[in-house]
Image (cartoon, rainbow, N blue to C red; front, side, top):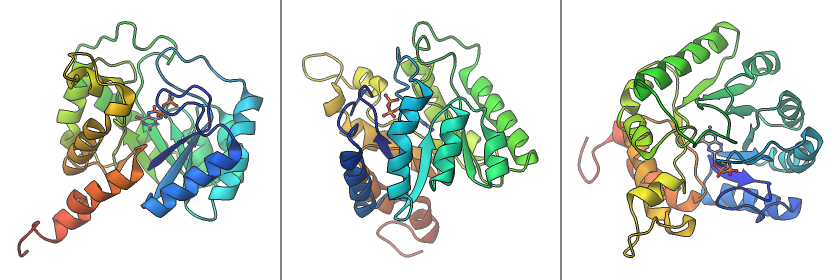
Length: 264
Ligand code: HH2
């Protein structure tokens, strides 16, 4: 899943694709690079982000979805019902929902739905995230929402632990370590670690400072690779070409088919 942020303020690519023509060009480039899904978002959910007015989000997202949808599967990254509805009408077939609330729309429209876990809201979520048992709480929340959606008629339900959404670096690592249990829960797992802050904190540069956003490609690919090996069926990434190369080497289909470098 390639990330396409049609926003002025996303944490890693804010402003680059706010212009619709540039967004469309980047979307098509991601298709060329091998993305199976392009995830179009018009509202940043970075820590501290404030909500975007609905009309503005609609203006950013709908036209881009309409042009990309004939070329690739499009998901819409939104928490707003009206934006999700308009994006689906424009051709999106997956609702990527960091609020984990929009499944009734997915059921009604006959599209897929991603339930992501978040503690709090983007405006405040990184202030002091706390859990008694992060893995148990996140998994229980996701499976509960996923079952409700499946019972409510959503045929394609994904679960996503929400790396960086109300979580410390230790919480993120625990969730990554325990991905196999989430994957065993019966719903396909999506994971997004791409360029996130904890990668910079855990692997600082030689000067001892957290790696800046543009220095987080190795960590992004390392954790996406880990996620795929641990059972994730999809990874959400900015650097599509690099992630596709990793997926080609270690993705589930290849591992199921034969051992790398040897016979079956
Ligand atoms: N992460 C971001 C946004 N949407 N959706 C899912 N399902 N999983 C994620 O981990 C996830 C997500 C944050 O990344 P990005 O879109 O690059 O930044 P911003 O929110 O600043 O636009």
